[in-house]
Length: 337
Image (cartoon, rainbow, N blue to C red; front, side, top):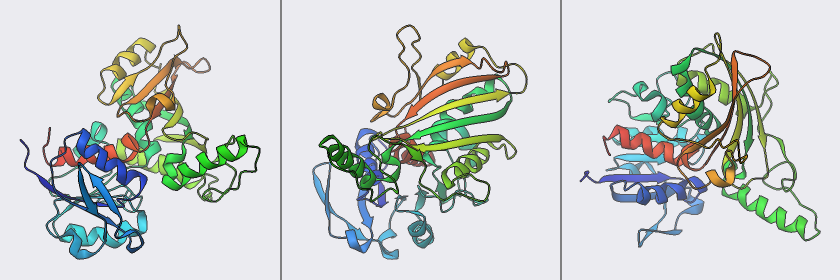
């Protein structure tokens, strides 16, 4: 039996924070003392975990004393403010924000893809952007079949990527519109029910939004391919949970055969092939919601280019795209399982 670990969750009241608690139970993560932390505004809230009520504490430097691993999911500013205190207290910090992802001394990790980036002395590990994780779970295994030259990806991103408030907004707007009312956006800048729009992050000087630039920069770092050509288009769609992505991968030379790709992906940890052409059954966000595997299908040669092939994937943003990936990092770091 694994030695219990004292665990802190910063951002415990959010959507990802709630997934951490569920994963601790589902994955039998050896939690000793559990500290649930949040902003002073959320302090005092009671959350039940495995039959015991825990009172959410206001985050402070003292809260990390005695903690073995701290999972951060409270935004980049909170991570920058509190990660130094947590690591100085001796905790491993697995940070789900963008605060440290591109720092050259901080490993940015998808365990199935680049665990070799982690050193035993690392005390801060960054959890990548959800869209990048889901894409790379399908793309990284293809490196066994040839040299990847370029990736073109269009994302169909659910409300869960923007947190619990965005999920509520989609539900409420949908009810309002179906009742004949007018949807009034609050969390997002546009009406969300029965609509889709470019990802709600700022457009950079290159014409790409922040989410798209994250996919490019983080994927290059994770794959160790700083010059890899990636062209992303990230879009919000009115789906409650789980992101989907349409991906075309261009190789140096002829693309591998479809059956080779299917076999390689089927043998890849964390990937489930859903590719039933006869019945037109392929990855869907409803099927991906609540499961740990990333679904991959629509595997086909690109009819416009013999060096390319196309895929369609769906993965749970709150799980593999966030909390699950972070828990897997801690499991590997502490030699669990």
